[in-house]
Image (cartoon, rainbow, N blue to C red; front, side):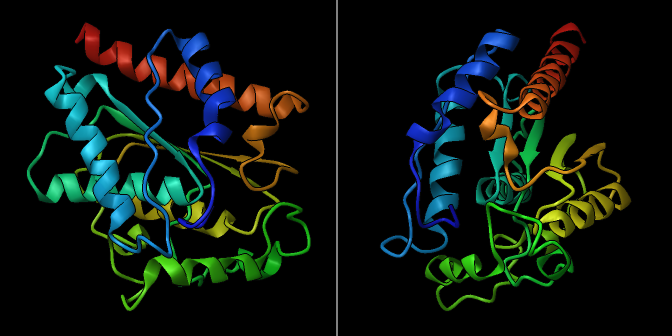
Length: 225
C-alpha cells in the first residue's frame, strides 16, 4: 500500500479469480517499494513489465491494465507515460479505488474518514517516502492532474464509504471530459478495495465478476474487430 508496503502474495486470490472467470492470463508484476526506491521507480517497473509483454509477442490490444489503490494510480500514470512516448496503449484499464491525487485534496478524505474501516487519512503519510522531493501534483505521481486525452477505456470501482471516493469520481469526470470511455461504479456501503474480501463478502464476489466480464468484453471486442 502507498507505494511502500505489500507484495504480489496479497494479489494471488484476486488474480486467480479473474483468470478463472475470464480465461485471460494474468501477470502480476512486483514493483520496487519506497523508501528505498522512491518515484519514479514503481512507474519504471510497471512500464518495464508492459514492454516485456510486448517483446514477448503479446500485442498491446490483448493487454488490459488493472490496479487498486496506489496501483490504480500507477496504472493511469503508466497509460499517460506510454501515450506521451508514442507507445502502443493497452486495450483498457480496470481500476479499483485508484489513488490519483497524492496531495490529498479530495473531500472524501474528511467526509468518509469515520466510515472507512480499512484506510484512514493519516495513512497517506506513507506517501512521502515515494514522493520524495517531487511536487505531489506531478502528473506521473498524481494522474488526476495529467492530460487524460487519448487514454483507453477505463472501468473504475470505488466504495461509497471510502476515503478515496473523491479520487475516483474526479478521475471519472476529468477522463470523460477528455473524451475517454469511462465506466464508474460506486458500491453502496463498501470501503477501500473491498474486492479483496471476496471469500467472505458477496458484494466483493459480484465486483470481481463484473470486473472480469468487463475485461472479457473489452478483450473480445478487440479480437473480433
